[in-house]
Length: 330
Image (cartoon, rainbow, N blue to C red; front, side, top):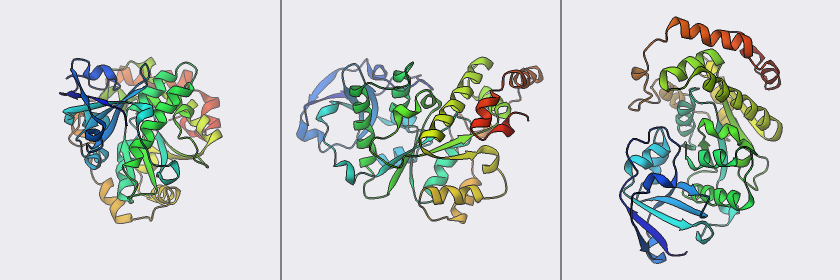
């Protein structure tokens, strides 16, 4: 492993929902760090630097606590006091055959994906909620929807390093994506894993849009574009991977049949008691997205605008192709 750069300090304050990047720590001064020292430090991938072919790691962070956080990237931002930057090609990894498989969970957000991550853990799996170098990679892949060879290799190195932290605990690692991943889903899938399995979580547009507008500062057209991108990503993944589609309303219904299907898909035993325990809690309690913080009601005029936009512009062909034709009408 090559000499690395150590940065003492923390990410800039006030980054909010911004996608992680190397500029998060731009104000810190680097020190050289010898390979022998690096080998003895716990490292968790923080972000990629496609311009230099380097990976920035959070150092001295407990990977298990980071994995169990509601938002992995936010946990790293808040807790990291030492960052280590390494050239991607210098990072030593176990042979791919020894690594756990990776399975990506997609959604447009505000669909219960944080709850689903906790259900997966309750079933005995590992689920990392929003390792944000995937968001970086998806946005970097625009507009072509694909990554160049070197950029793709850098993403694979970060993925393999992250899943290697769980080699002794699981057969697969589920990684929950932010909505940015829907802009280039195929570019993010792990290499060399066949058949490729993916998860997708969806919700009807109108309640989804209302939920998103209570949580974030997006306008109506932005939300429509985000939702349409999710439908296009779902169609791609259904065509090119073994994709399990789950529905928000089903997850919030009385039956746990969806959880049985999920357990079978992940090759885990179904534990009804553990799933019901998770379902009884607010999955985002203690975060800015906790239910108690999002109690405001949208103006009736705005709700009607949302309904009218969907009536006029619902992508009916996409809904039919993805098996979501019932989303067309409320």
